[in-house]
Length: 358
Image 1 (tube, helix red, strand yellow):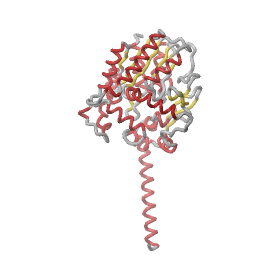
Image 2 (cartoon, one colour; image 1 turned 90 degrees about the vertical axis):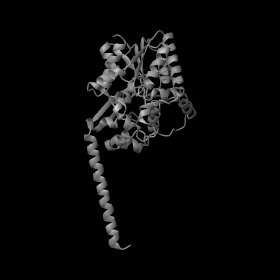
Image 3 (tube, rainbow, N blue to C red; image 1 turned 90 degrees about the horizontal axis):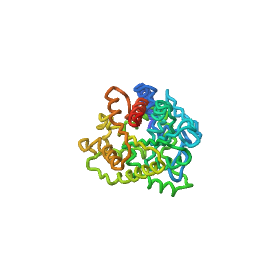
Image 4 (cartoon, helix red, strand yellow; image 1 turned 60 degrees about the vertical axis):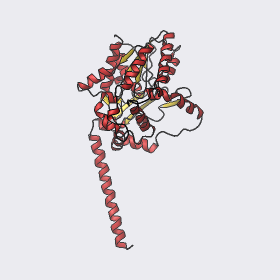
């Protein structure tokens, strides 16, 4: 190939590289302007934005937040301060606390400031300290285990468990298998769920974050698989015997344990984000073989409520309150990260207080 052609080829590649760089820069700017807080909500994916060292392994419950940890979750324009007490509960330890809150990332809530969590808001309204023992990814089985570790250590009076019908039904059916794998790998180095490069790119680039969160079924490793599993629970032909028995067993044992210890139990049922924001259904089904006409959005929740009624567990359905706030113009759920917003936490706090008769 002649020298002039090589020079023209090099110039062409250089021009393409410059255009690509400009595209990325403009796209990044647009992504950050598309939402307040520097697109921080898109970057606050709980798994990817969690600071290093947030969790320590547990042979029976998979993980605990690191005791006495002080850390931050940061995105452009947003910083969330995290603190955990001696028993790995979020917030400042209070020796007078007699109430215990359990649940997954919607209770732990590392995507909002501590005073904005539903547990902190409820505690402020009731003037009663509440231990926030929620842990990202927890199932009802793990909530039971965490409750049992508080028994005998703290003289509890009230236990509130937030059950998210989207993830908890799936997580309850998988917990024991996950625990077996975890125990079998004790002492071995487990594969990281996300590479350090992916964590940094997701954490720093709003454009990359929005691209992945706009299409939860692709990429993001196990997170995409979990999302597809959640969608299947809405299908009218889904075999409920694959997941409901494990949830029933976990709730029954939690009911019996709290009754044995004379602790009051309230299960707050949080609907799936798509039941609150049904306008996002069609977009969520893209890339799957599920047809919108086969979806019954209320199905997992109504089955869960029926199960709780059969078990005689005091229940607080959060659906109507969240839908009402949404219809009134409130931004209660972030559809991109499927987490409660600060307003959503406020609504949950008020509804739980109403259910408690306080």
